[in-house]
Length: 318
Image (tube, rainbow, N blue to C red; front, top):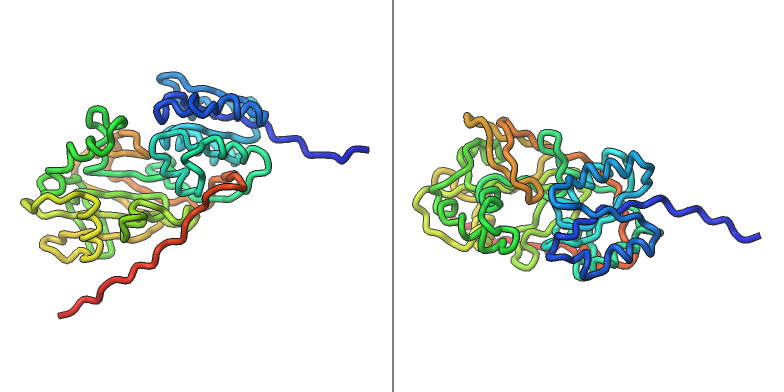
């Protein structure tokens, strides 16, 4: 008698063929997923990936996959968490921050499809903003406005630069208050709430997350006084991170981790970016972490996550 083998789970992979300048076609992801026995569902313009994923679950999918940018990944990940189904992430977007922080090979998206059979199962956290899940972050202020800049997705650095000036000079702000370990900060220029903390202390790993299962949100709140001279934003963040919130009117940057945070204020709502998608959220806005709610399958062969660098801060004198 031949040995009994467990049948492969029924896998459905939602793919966005427009993400990453057409990576789905360039890396032949449809054909490669089908070789692994997966059914592929391609999104069309105007399609909601979450609706397609829920339809697949209703039709009996036992494993969900997603190939696209972080917005598409976030939508399908929310459905996978809701259904408690494993998720395979294929980095077919432009930046692929979530896939990078999972330790996946973002240069060769097809490698992630190996996880469809015998992938390594891990449980990771999701963030939630007023009940809406996010895999990366919720942003207010400078980053949220950049999402509305023309052609931002095609040229993100230019889109960010086009709106950065008034913010880094303290002439524009988020119309809300945030309670931080350094006290209440009113009208900050940037509020960035991430699913686990971003590293900002060293240039090489700026914006990297070294864990996705720490059970906490990462918080970055940037405050600038009116009339301060402009600086390149990455350098500004690093310099203020070293100084802390010690300048006039609380100028500086406060970073910490927390399970839950609320933004409040007199405005009816705020412009926000949720995993790179521009939205408006009504105040007060509450974000919280949902520990270990997402099951992810990772390929056995992958670059992995580098060790977090040890940062030696100079002692203050005086």
